Amino acid sequence: GRGPLAGGPRPAVAAQEKKLGPLFIKFANPVEIQQIFNTLNNEIGGESINVMRVMIQSEDWEKVKNFARLYDTFLRKDVLVPLAGRLGEKQPQAEAIADEVLKTFMAIDKAAKRQSRGKALELCDKIEDLVKEYVALKPGGGLDVRRLEADKLGLKD
Image (cartoon, one colour):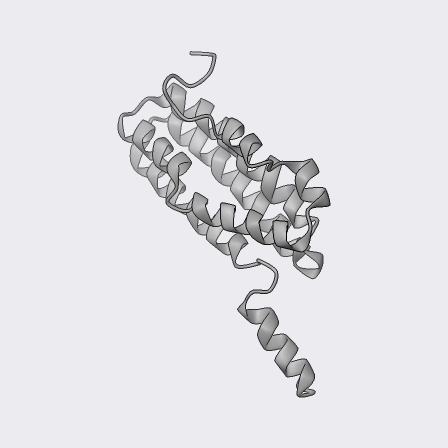
């Protein structure tokens, strides 16, 4: 089975509609960066991951492999990697998470080849956990506020 995913959503297309992608991210202003993080946050328990779970549950392994490849491009290559470049001191952390996402999608591909439903579903959970970790790096998150307070008070962490 080559070709587009029969009846599945087209995450890459959805991303285009939201203007997401390396070029948009490169030139995004701080408000747009916040919006990109909000969009990322919607991936947790969102349509794409749930479609992948359904494909795994129904053991449609060819679709699982194709979708994992597509989803890796849409999520990691088009968003997580370029966004890491905009995160200043958090860039190494963000890049490390993006690398884990790649390894996890590769592991999903391997699980699909072995037709291991349990393992593949476990790895879907891992993708969500990694996205959560990444979203926690959002600029202006709680930790930054605390650090600013500490700086004002002359405290070191």
